[in-house]
Each structure stands twice: as structure tokens, then as C-alpha cells.
Image 1 (cartoon, rainbow, N blue to C red):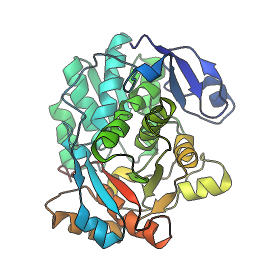
Image 2 (image 1 turned 90 degrees about the horizontal axis):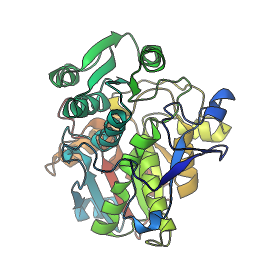
Image 3 (image 1 turned 45 degrees about the vertical axis):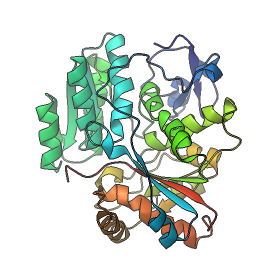
Image 4 (image 1 turned 90 degrees about the vertical axis):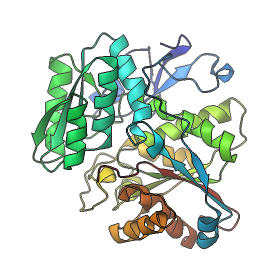
Length: 363
């Protein structure tokens, strides 16, 4: 573990906790019925390029993904600059590898022999791969309609799969494995949900530094979002760069979702409700949101953006004509630019990064 990791702080009540594993977030807020994520604190972190909890983590070569300048898209959308951060270049094809590297490494250091998760998509594949690399068992709770290629990929990496009828019904199974059978939590299992284990979410922080070194300090970053691990992790990276004096301001982070969840949660000030909807944007589906998503938007000055399946499909075709295959939910980030431009949040001076989370190689 990183010796400068000094503790964790609740993003809701600001209570401090010693370095340990908190897969259910802040214990005090959980007891009060308000699941809240914890953020890691480091001593002398300004001296570290981008501090993460686990040093010398298990790796399959994740990170340092390409960031493509897309001037034709920028011109078409009426913004100054536009880049595509291609997280599909990670080993299993999605951004989840960054989180899996830290999370699985921590599981091994903690003496765990198995990792349990609820996922029918990229997270399950990634965790299965990194568990294989770390010689840990992987128990993945999937839905009965899990895409065949996702299911097959998890099984090839040796994961043990258990199918459930719907997304929420998987969580009690994972909760039982983690609370009663010694499994290390690879995903959320609470309802209302909390973010994934804070040590895993820290794995997304280097994206901020990679962007800074490649394209400077953008004005806006557009992130496909379900429960906000990626959104929050990227924010934490920029927050570190601000606190260490590397940047003078934060970029705005915008959350792309297929139907209104965060906008409703923000209006009510409560992220604990369920707002179901139907969508083909598989990776950012589901009716739940999290406090960490709201915090990333609030602290960065960003906004939620709803993108329909039809708009996402049109954006997907535009990217394909450029030679880029993307998952539908990844393409939704491009569709969100048009909505942000029309709303006046983006203009001809804006410099925008789209997080392309996956290339959709598995459907």
C-alpha cells in the first residue's frame, strides 16, 4: 500500500476514517440511511505525480490510452477543440481495467482469495481478467439477459457466474458473499447504492493527468455515467492537480445518461431513489444514481445530460465513419456535445474531451 495514504474522508459528513476497507462507504452515513462514498487522503501528496492506494499493482498494461484530436468533429459541433479519450485501448476493452487493477491488487494484499461483483458487462469481464492475473477467484452475478459475448469472456477468464432475473436482484447475493463468506467486494451491492470500493475508484485518477499532458486543461469533459465511479474518479484526479498547483481551475465534468436520473436526484437533493427507464445503452442503464455522481457535478460545475438511444446511435454511426467503433453508451458522449452546445454550456471557445469508455467489441 502507498505509505502516504493517511485515511479516508466521507464526501457527505466529512468524517475521517483510518486506512482500511470500506466497501459500503462511510459507516456513519450508512447507519443513518444515506450511503456515501469515501475519498482517500494522502500525506505530502503534492510530491506524487498522481497518488493511488496500491503501489506496484497487478497490471495487464492498463492506462496511457490514446487521446485523439478530432478537429472535424469540433468544427461540426461548433466548439473550439474536441478530443476522444479512447479507453477501449485498455487490455479488456474498457475503462474498467483501471479500477480493477487497484481493486484486485488491494484484495490480494488484504488476504482475500475471491472477489465478488454484480455485472453483466465490462466490469465483470475486467474483474475476471484481473482476478485471473492475481490468482484470485471471481464470483460474478449476472442478469439472465447478459450478452453472450460478455458471459463467454468472463468464463474464459475463469469466473464463476450466477444468473438473476434483473439487475437489483443480484445485489443481495453479492452482499451475502462479501459479508458472510469472505469475498472482497468488486462492485456495489447496497440498495440505495454507494460507489465501488474507494481504492478501486482511485484507479481512474490518472486519466486527468494523461489528459493534461496530452491536450492541456480542457474546459469540459463528457463522461458516460451509471453510478459514477468513472465520473468521480476523474474528478478526484483533477482535484489533486488543482491542490498540487498543477492547474489553476477545474474542468467541468458532465454526466451522460440515457434518461433522467441525476437531474431528478439533483432537483430533490437525494440520490437514493430509483428512476427506471428502458434503453439500449447497456453500460449506463439502471434506475439508480449515487451521491458521488452528484458531488462530481457540483464540485466541478458540470451538469447531467440525457441522450436518447436514437441520438446515441446516430453519433455511433458518425464515429464509425471516422474508423472508430464504439459501444452505444460511449457514442452517447458525442451526442451530448450537441445538447450542451444548444443549451449554451459549450461555445466556440470550448475545449472538450469525450471519454470513449468502450469500443463495444462484445456487443
